Length: 173
Image (cartoon, rainbow, N blue to C red):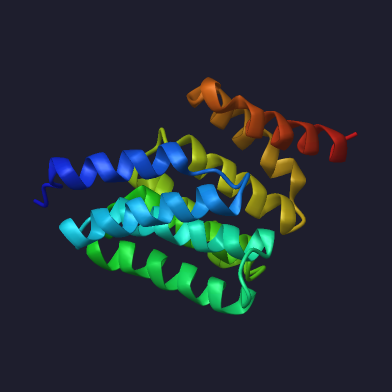
């Protein structure tokens, strides 16, 4: 079983503290922490998954010069996370999130979300991803219970879940 070094974990958590899609600078600072964590521990799946999301934010916010290249990098890091540890729910979440938003490959996003939830049935972000994938696939009725479950599991992150709930309730009249 892989044991992450304390130093790499510290850098990962610093990266998470910086991570926000609010600014390009925060995204780059976060990415640098993840990069350093991976230098120390090249088998740290969560750091690869987190790195993938920073590149997805480059694409979403059009922060880089080449948005298509950002998606390629995001998918590459997500796949590396899975290759390093196929039992890591965050790795599958990152891949599914990219498939959903950058590639509009809803079925692949659903598969990835289900894989994350099979590994951790209490993973709130997995429910949120599955909800969005169903919603954008034309099944908003399947999204609502997943949004409620995500909010129940992670009430501290409820701002995004309220957005999801609002979307679900709106489309269900």
